[in-house]
Amino acid sequence: MKKIIMAVCLASLWGCADSHSLNVTESNITATINSTQSVYIALSKDGSYGKHHYDGSGMMLSQTIQSSLIKRLHNVEIARKPELFPEALKSAQRDGYDYLFYPTIMHWEDRSTEWSAKPDKVTVKIAVIDVETQTEIKSAIVDGTSGIATFGGDHPQDLLPEPVEKFTAQLFN
Image (cartoon, rainbow, N blue to C red; front, side):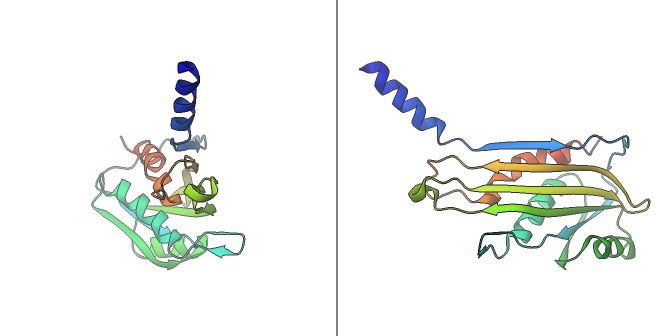
């Protein structure tokens, strides 16, 4: 009986854990960012799932990137409105930024996990562009899935900081 109770307890804890994955593209470019350089973060279009639109999700993604970068850089700015890639690159060039971070929400699903037992899910792409050469120096796909037993506290944006931090850390000396 004790073994059964122990197995049930362990299984319930397994459902509490969030999972993340970070898939970074391999590149022949070995550029690194230093603390004197500047970054323009494009504002992603908001995510949606089915007929549900998640207002502000694009800003949440861009702010997560900014929070990670601001630890290492002094000049980090988020765009005021969503821009297509060519527009974002022109904005970064016009304002003299060294790098463009271009995030895209591919999947954003905020569920009432505690009631439905369906996890929150998020998939985003982050491309880092050298503005002067207009070359992609690195990109990553970030996937996250919440645990089942969230007690109403998790949202897709809560799944982003850890893998985004791992990604941005790779870009510095």
